[in-house]
Length: 286
Ligand SMILES: [Zn+2]
Ligand SMILES: [Zn+2]
Image 1: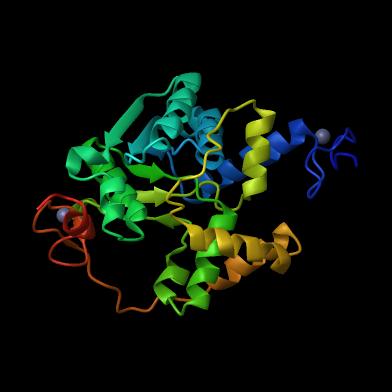
Image 2: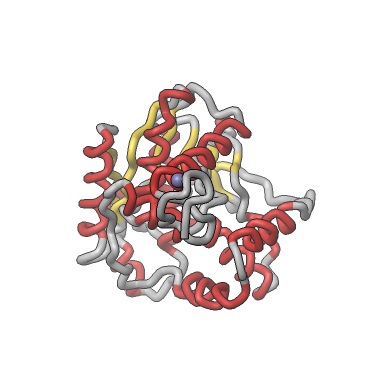
């Protein structure tokens, strides 16, 4: 199979690109994401887990940062998962060094318990709560304008499908490509520059650029449901275009007006929907 642009051997079969034109295609997606949201001259914190998506994100954004006047830093959140967190941290630190970006580390244990201790108490979905809380708090306290995450098209599709299959409209509508910063609510906005790029495309981007990433699986498999849905997605979608069409159709649904009011947690003073936030009630020691 030949590259659709230059006729050389294609490495990316679905869209028929050689390595060089795949690279150009990939970076163009990131550029058009930033341009469409007018993201310019801002301080952006990269949430890097060390996996292929966030490593590709860090590298991709670094390639275009000067065009957009972005100041980047890498944040790794150590949840204290035995044998796993240390492994992931190596790759997160590695990509920061490789790109000459500041490396920031936040440990969940500095705030109370570790995930391993909490999991003992059989509470699910806690990793997501802890990560969202810690990245927002760190970004706020260190003057970042936005947080960028490595969420890809397949992640967003899985969220939407999971929400549809379990009648959870919040989850369906929550898979947004962008959320604004609300400084008065201590809420730092989220950028998802890989929103229209797939897992396979991120993996290929890492390969082409010789980027090393963490291949270990979390022993708590925090997203068992997400993984199961992704397996089932393989027989549902015939092409990347169908995935994009699906997400774009869902995006046309208007959010209901009676959205929950964000307030500030009575204990820590960071955003919450309840008097005391989920993080404080689940993780911080009483
Ligand atoms: Zn080519
Ligand atoms: Zn709190």
